[in-house]
Image (cartoon, rainbow, N blue to C red; front, side, top):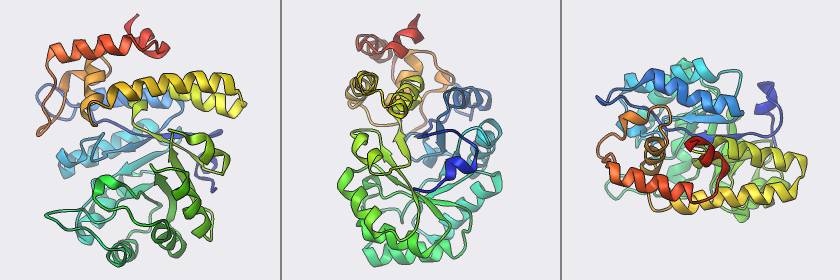
Length: 312
């Protein structure tokens, strides 16, 4: 559904991952490490969301740091893979528009905009959610993605997302982390083509029903494995697809003990991936050496080929 990938002359299906943000040991943004981190995804043909509130620790970034994250992402990725912003959710239209303008000025392909932030007990109603996006999209004309996501405290019904997309042509993507029932409800309520990206878990159903591509945070750790999953799907190689999917799910079971971005920085430290030295920003605590070594041993025990290659 839709053609953002075709517009960028990219071949076939893609996966968009919510990228980590790399820091130096003194806590500053490590720009060189961030370039190397993003290059791993360009090399495997995976697209990125930058500055996510979870994986990207976006809420800890200053406005100037957000600008640099977007600028570096565009520098490394633009024209090779989709490079999108995933700006931290805000509670007011004014703040949301300001963050979106920052990303648009940096040249990202698409701006992901969440609904109003849940704060101090506030949870949007359906009508408030619709009014919020009417006000935001009256000012933001850059290509936009919507992302109904329970981590923001409110999951709008599929008809609400469809109504926003139907009425605002700059909405070009919807990111779903839910199952095929929500996907079907959304697709049925849309009256124009909108790209729908779905979580990789149990994605065969939604891909066969017309989903554009996949979403994952695990690809921060094992991008080549996800590339294999996509390639196997496009070859219709079900045997390879099943084998690679099993590898991914083993990794998912391991990291489920820690929420993002904790597990991402654990993996980066355990296998010395670009940016590993800087760890996490407060309020997160950077894991100690014993936990890093434990993670490394458990990850290597999974029998995932890409992880074994990292340790070779």
